[in-house]
Length: 465
Image (cartoon, rainbow, N blue to C red; front, side):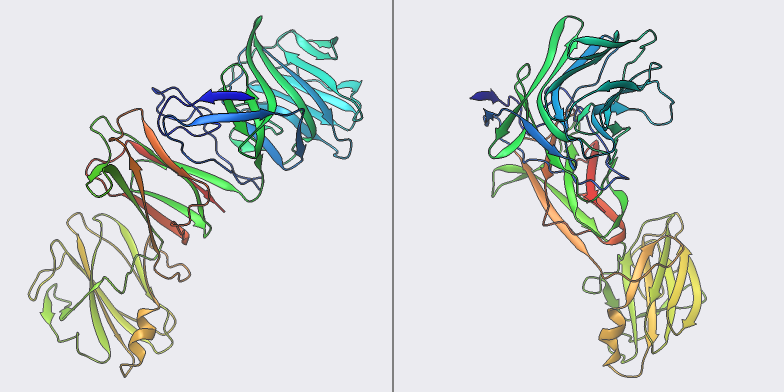
C-alpha cells in the first residue's frame, strides 16, 4: 500500500505543486490530435491519497500519463516495457518543441521491431530488435541509448534542456499530444539526474483509477484517455474563447495580492462567481423594452413602442470602442435602427452616433463600432403586422461582437461558483475540473467574466471541441 498526503489546499491529484507555485507545473495545451483530458477533483488540505501498487500499466494506443517533469541535460530516462507489435509507429515517452529540427527533442519511439530514440542532434534510427513478446529495459540519456544494458549508440552532441513536460505513453509536442500513442505495457519508469534517482514511476491505482505513482515524490499521475480535442486559453478576465459548442473541461482561478473571493455569510466561505455568455449577447428577457425611438438627428423621442403591435425598442449595456453586429433572421421583413448613448437613454437624450435605418428580409444585418463614450445602445425594430409576430422576432435577434454577422445562436448564459476557505492570494489558485455541467458553451465566441470585487490575476479555461 502506497500512501501520501496533499499538503496544500486546492491541489489537483496528478498535478501537485509547491504552495508557492502560481501555475500548475507541466501545464499543457491539447489541440490537433483528438484528445480529451480527464482531471480529478480538488481535494481538501488533509485529504489522503491511498494507492494500490500494480504489476503493470497497460496502454491501448489512446491513453497517456502526463508527468510534471522537464528533462535536463544530465538526465537519463530508463523504462521497463513490453510493446504491442501491431502499430506501425508509436511513442513510448517524450517531449519536444515544435519549430526546431532536433534540438529540444527527447523521445523514444517504436517502429515495429525498431527502437527510435532522439536526443538533441543525435537523432538516429537504431536497428535493434525489441521483441513484443517480452519485457525490455530501454535507457536514453546524454551519453547514449541502451537496450537491456547494452550500448546501442553513443551520443556526442546531446545538448538538451526542455521547457516541455514529459509525457509517458505519447509525445508531448509543444503541448500537443501526437496521435501515434503507445500500445503495450509499462512496468517502471526511472529518471536519474546524474547518479541520483530523481523520479521512480510505478504502476498503481488510486480510488479505482489506474496510473503511475512516483515513489520519490509521493505523487499519483492518472492514466488519461484521448477522446475529443481539448483547447486551453488563459488571460485576465473577461476573456473570450471561440468554441465549437462543446463543454468546458476545466476552470482555474488564480489569486491576487489583494485576495480574490467575496465572503458568503450563508456558507461561511469565500465565493468566486464565474459567468460564461455565448456569442449572442441579446437577452430578450433582460433587455429593457422602452418607449423611445432613436431619431436620425441624434436624439431619442418617446414613441409608445411598448404597447405598439409591430415595433419595439430595446436598451442594452455595451462596451466602449467595441465592434458589434445586430441581426434578425425573420421572414416577415424587419426595419432596424441603432443608437448609442453615454448614459441610460431618456426622451430627448443625445446620441453618440446613429446608424440609419436598414431594411432587409432575411436577415437584417447592422454592424457598428461604439465610441469611447458609448455605454448603452438603443435598438429599434419594426416588424410584422400583429402581436403574433413579436415572439418569433424576439427569438431571432442576435447581438454579437465583431463587424460580421454569423449564424444565429440562441442566447446562452451559464454560471458557476467556486468556494474557498479564504481569499485567494497571489500564487494561489482554485479550480473546477471534469465535465462542468453548469457551464454550456455557445458555438463561436464566448466571454468569461469573474464577478468578485477583486479580479483574479488570471483564469485558465480548458474546453472540448
